Image 1 (tube, rainbow, N blue to C red):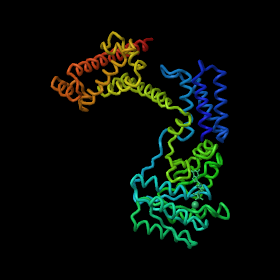
Image 2: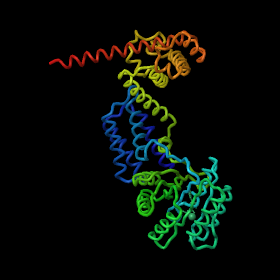
Image 3: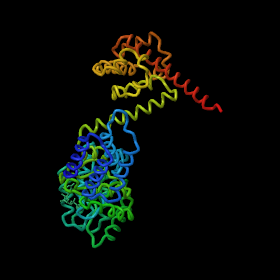
Image 4: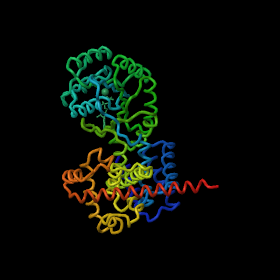
Length: 445
Ligand code: GDP
Ligand code: MG
């Protein structure tokens, strides 16, 4: 991981240092991204698809207002990496059904037994009663290994030291866990066999007996892009619901392991980042890429771009005439995030703005004043009822007094806000009218 983080943060620093992103620089940066990804064992086709998207989007898309082209390039890198790693959404690690059964499968040495204990620990910390069952009868130390791990974390454990029958152990183990009221049952399986075929067949037999709610495939990340072939082989025998990618801490091929598993269609849920039982993380592509690109302020950049996108959505709502105080609330949120960049500032003729807002538009030094006012407006909107937000017309003077009291402001502040709302409403109507006029003109022969 470390070399990958270093390579990407150097690249980001380099982009930041550019004064202008011209064609040649872009090509060079794209080549550098390719080099970094290939070195991380990401397969050539995935590398190409990531960099092609970045290049195309950079050429086609206009950076949002106020965002420099180099910042936008960094943002595109961030976005496309997240996409290649399975998307924005963090995996769902909630357990609702009880008892919930997870079966771990994977080749020998991939880290199943260690990961079983990590998972147990992860869910015990969330208040679940967890039981571990060892069904590996091939590896001599397996029984002791898991028993020892279970006792070190105080998890329930079931195994049979001298048995040669994994299915019998499983049956007894499930019964034991039921009696002991485990909420979560984690079933560890064998990884060593004479050949792959036999291993997969046994996984299938245990799967049919256990009827697990989730089959979690454990893969050693040091295999890099080979991880896809492994995933696909297992998928032929049992449905793979999630993947636990181990040893992320000790490989330079993490990128290849991650992208290839994702490309095979499996969902990575957890990653192992060390040998200890606490060295487990929920795999969250967004957080992962943020860390990879190595910048705290990336979050700020991304938030800003997302806020602009959010504001554009609100603008659409307004233009469609869906203006009420709820829309205004969303509006104020984006103004608070975007400051003088806010599109509303461009849209509203400054003469129509209340004094404080005019300051916001014209005098950046007094921005904090205006931000205070916006925040005050935010409190005001928060102390209104849903009904009032949707039908501002019903707000009479006694309601104004109540709202002012709730928000800890003066009634005048509430009136200012309502005036501003009326102003916007009038303006939106103007826009709509002129649209109609335009449309009418457009219909003339
Ligand atoms: P199994 O054969 O699939 O059950 O694999 P084990 O759980 O016995 O693990 C094999 C080896 O990998 C052990 O030495 C573990 O300590 C090590 N291991 C497992 N997960 C990780 C991890 O996330 N990081 C590191 N560095 N080592 C790990
Ligand atoms: Mg094992």
